[in-house]
Length: 217
Length: 263
Image (tube, rainbow over all chains, first blue to last red; front, side, top):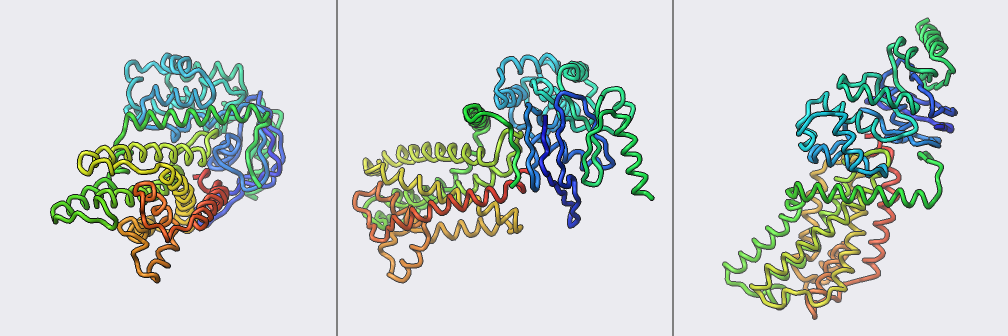
């Protein structure tokens, strides 16, 4: 369970301030596949970062009673001067895992041959993103926080994602309603600073649609 | 107050913290071994200055420094201590720019970088002693290591506070970096690294002694020279400033945490 206790999170773009979360009190289960719905991609990203612990809130508390991943697919934490092996080992050890096992696992999944011994910057942007997704998904968290529902088209990535879907919770920012209905069983609707948890994706989509219509009118 | 918490025991938290710190330290050490250029460049400026001053004295056939003994030793002892303080401050800023996973904090990186900078300067110190030994003889070896390590410890505390203050002013108020680089270079000239404070006129000495780093350099040189003039050394003043720098540093780190973490 992730508990949001009177959480306020604002976002500043230039001189404009907007509320991402406005005094939110919510308990989010960490063993379900939850579609994160909302009109603003930036706000959904900020929420994922708050839940992951990458971004701090302005006030309130975020209490995590489960092992929550860092945002899956976030590249910036790579040290590009180190080899891929060293980066993977670093992440594994940070999270208290056997570095050798994780390195070997990631090496098999990403399947880039001898380039695995080279530096991260030698990979293409797609391969770097895939590598970060694979590293994130190779660590056994209780719930995974994805930055988007697009999993890189490398074969190992997709298989790993599907394997984790079966055993762990996920919170996925989604625009594609069909993907949300097929892959998720709950919905989080983020709209104008309000965050609501719904028991089904269909309910979430209809509430989002109603809120959007209300604002337009 | 806002923070992110995981419900866990104290023992678990301590073990986790130790594991994170060990990992960060190991990875940073590996990075330095694989890419030593940055670590070497950071100690090159004082080495270059010391070598240049020594060369100038040798070419001009001058063999006296502010105190008896080799001019190279005199300038090396002052510049070594002063540059340690300057580089430590820069380390704070570098730590703020390191991108992190959620389990890491800015303070973790500050601590790691400070420890490694201390190791860099230990190695530099050994290098300087070994380089000067064949030239000036046994006086290259410090007379008493206790004041030297005391000075390094107090300079570490001062450097931490100064470095975090610089980060706060740069990121909070947008003060350009060149301002602090200039201030650092001016303070090198005004901290007694290149002359003996006790030999200055009283009114000049008064103003120079307002700088706490001046006292740290006098303390450092007490370990190099058995009879270094140290009437100006005010240990309570130095210790008060060092502790205050640490307190201010922690307060600013807490205040800046959201800004740093959300970048």
